[in-house]
Amino acid sequence: MDKIKRNERLAAMTQILTASPNRIFTLSHFCELFSTAKSTVSEDVAILQETMRQFRLGKLETVTGAAGGVRYRPIGLGATGRDFVEGICERLREPGRHLPGGYLYFSDILSDPQLVHGMGTLIASQYYDANVDFVLTMETKGIPVALMTAGALRVPLIIARHATKVYEGSAVNISYVSGSGNIETMALSRRAVKEGQRALIVDDFMRGGGTARGMIELMKEFSVTVAGICFVLALENPKHRSIQGEKTLMLLSDIKEGEPLQIRPADWID
Amino acid sequence: MDKIKRNERLAAMTQILTASPNRIFTLSHFCELFSTAKSTVSEDVAILQETMRQFRLGKLETVTGAAGGVRYRPIGLGATGRDFVEGICERLREPGRHLPGGYLYFSDILSDPQLVHGMGTLIASQYYDANVDFVLTMETKGIPVALMTAGALRVPLIIARHATKVYEGSAVNISYVSGSGNIETMALSRRAVKEGQRALIVDDFMRGGGTARGMIELMKEFSVTVAGICFVLALENPKHRSIQGEKTLMLLSDIKEGEPLQIRPADWID
Image (cartoon, rainbow over all chains, first blue to last red):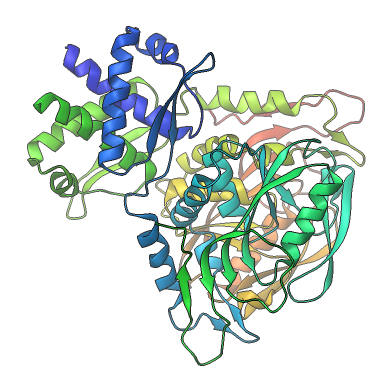
């Protein structure tokens, strides 16, 4: 009977911890839930830690101190991050994705729930210790990856819009020069973020960083610090560069019609 | 040693199954992963089923037949669906969410990773047997909930845009009358969906159903069947109604300035 109980506890703990990534659960929480002693829960945690490590299912960390406990940080993807990203590069190399004007069709990749979960997890893994208060993206295509990044970091997602919407209340608008050279506007509801917070910017594609530069300027208007910038895909050698220090999951050489796509995982991914 | 192995298997199986909702894993898959006998894996599955049931963590189903195995369907939320949705209603009743013109601020709710995970899970639970090929939403605010619904159903998310974008390739455009009475356009890439597929429409808010009617018309252009329509929030007694048979998580009486918000979970949620 006792054995069955440990099995049940471990299964339930795994589901609870992995469903709320980056949230610290006190050991007392599990003691109450399972009506069991703290020493027993500690043993359970040790077993789970070893299992997660062994099967590359993420990292279970014990946090000491007054607000201490245990938290799950999704890092592993069952495979290595590099294999996962190389798999996406492989799909992007499929013929027919080149569009007129040097564009690449990858909307399907950017809204595939399993793929964006993996990509968001990988991006989040680089910012667990960056004390991020929210993830910021610009509508539309980056929203799914940014949402999964925010979920893994357990912070809200904030979406900047192209124009002020009546249902967002009063907003701050700025103008910026987009990657294609046009002057565009970006708007964010006044109540969306607070002064002094720290933002992680996540977006789908960097051509020269114009939109990201706009998001940085927007954050200045709110007195928010930008703690990091990460893209799904970035042009490797842009002609103009509006930002520095960004990360990306994949790097793309210039798109030339009729030539195979040169795309590869970024070097930091192992 | 043998006992430890069962513990480890159960923890790893829980993580693997819950990370890929609605995907059927064969028992052989786990036999190979753990180098163990089918009868042992069957016992593991029985323990997991009981645990998920007991702690309301979702449903583990065994699927018979040639393509058979075991799949996880997130249904429970740790609490009841009604408590969860009532909690969101509670937050929407907070003062200051009324905006001029009878609008309601709920962008924060619609992009909170934990809340959209719960909402998407609840919506998906109504369509597990509807043979849905993809979830369709219209940019921007409904994207996070629609993504989580698609994730739980293990189907792609398809995002209709306000205008054709160069990076989407050739597209189908239609005109529709929005909830506020304006003529707007909606565009979807030709390659996004296939003739004969079945769509589940998910969106954030129904005023009179104009945008949803537009999505239905758009699907007709692609010869796609609409298998269901679900909103996060719907006006309870709209003056004009463009669609029938929709579901919603929450119902809202007309918004009157200076009066408390009348909002409640839909009756189907238990």
